Image 1 (tube, helix red, strand yellow):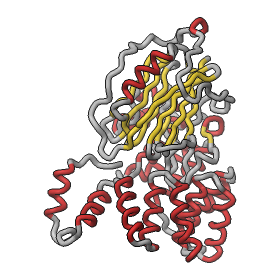
Image 2 (cartoon, rainbow, N blue to C red; image 1 turned 90 degrees about the vertical axis):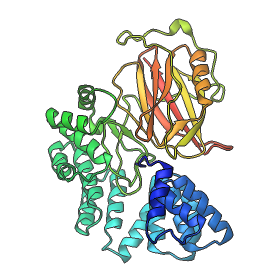
Image 3 (tube, helix red, strand yellow; image 1 turned 45 degrees about the horizontal axis):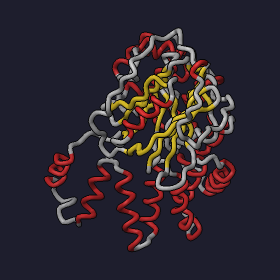
Image 4 (cartoon, helix red, strand yellow; image 1 turned 135 degrees about the vertical axis):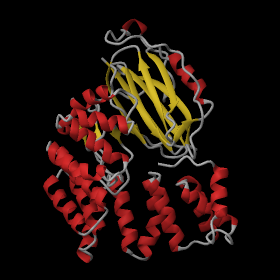
Length: 435
């Protein structure tokens, strides 16, 4: 997570450092600052500029890594492929295998991993990647063997232990998962996914007191601890922790209070699938333009929820280095609504647990709406009477919440990335189905 550092303060600190940047060029200083801020988008622009002037292996590989870090795995391979063709270096091939795995191209990834392991069976990173591939294929026992091998070869402990905990959770051995994760948490050096996995394991082990304390201490979610716990109690890994190709990554494992779709390629990521994520959804009408064919007579208020004030506020504040949601459109689909969010950069997100029958929330990481989106929100609400509220709220922790409140009860929801032409590179499609 990008730390909130005032640019002027950051510059002052960097300028005061001895050595380092004192005699560096303006470009070097800018790159250093962007690196400290984890501003991948800014770094991509720098490396594209470098390569346009002087194409070289090191900068090209680093550019591929940057694209991988923002989740643009196709572009990462575009710039990586010439390096692989010219020199089949292990680090090039590992990154290519990770990209293939993220893109759902298991066969391509498996071929690379198998070849590399035959040459270097002492690489913990390769054994971990092999475990991720096997987990994606549902071969849990073999995946565990690979993760244990990676652990024995001293690969990143938190990553491997999270993956082993994930395997335990998927086999409903929650005590074992808890025992994996508690030592990591006690060291106070952990990633958010470790906490999410631990809370889930504690809840499923009926250790509600410990789960409640962690939820409060770590400020997990926007709902009350009891609401989160009750939501997690209903989630079954085999029924609701879906592992489709496009969702499995080799990034950090996270069986969280949330749906994870943005994890990076070092660990396994499980997804809390919505109750009806396997429902067939009809194509939208009007090419994502708001449809006026809503049958108002069939819209029934959700009797289990209070009506919510439809007034919405404009997005407040700003998020450092945020990716902008530059466009929002809507459409009517069979028994529901569709929203689409457009951006020039991939947006990482998670679906928060549904705690109200007529509301869903999606956390958008390092993302915020452009100023014109507020008018789009108002227009969509006016065009779709069943949508009571569409608001985007600054969380104050480098993420924002897209909150959608409906008049009817929600039966299911689904969010996918979709291809898009033109200036936008990212399109998130959110489908909401009514009961």
